Image (cartoon, rainbow, N blue to C red):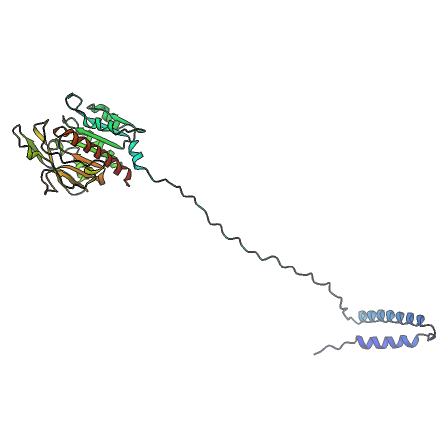
Length: 330
């Protein structure tokens, strides 16, 4: 139901009453007339307000203008910064420089034989190592053991046990620990028939070779039966840095026991590099490489063959085992 507005009616009645009660102004004075009209309007306005108040009417008070809404700026999150991790940059390893500065421990037991040139010592000296530690203990087992157990991290351990059988037992345990730590090993040993089941057994097993049979040479020997054949002429032991001929037709220094013969066994990665027969590549071996090239086993005596063959061969042993040592990933 609509609500009737009484304000226009009230306004008309009040205005009419006031107009009738006002005296008539002379027409000749327009200013007075205007003043009267203004007063009438003012009185009318007051009357309307009073009437509205007495009647309970609500005055419509103009509301103050709404404040202008200024929107906040739209928040745009900054793009997340991508963490920039500076990876360490490692220059390519210079294997040649590492080899040159290697720490090498050597046992060579020919010191008590002045007529025998120390093959290992002479080879090492000719290779001009510098920057590392070269410890030549000759045939002093106590010094070798002390150095092997020292704080020095040896890169290569060489054992050239050509004369005696003193290097045995716990000495091989030291070498086994060295191998397990990623070190390189060169082992010249001719008496495996006496120690193969002893402390050297774990080394042979890890390598993947075993004792096949003893190698005997009488004084009335046939030189051709003691010539060595290369079983893989492209193997790095035979080609880098020197290309080495097979040690044939020996001029023996040692008789009766010429050395030992190897055979391949399970559990390792050994390959026979040299042997007595060109077509026997799993037995009758006298030179083996294993542990991904970190280990070399030679079971013939170096001094039974020509110096100009054996010495370059030893240099190849050293270069090859150290190279594989530095390339080794556990």
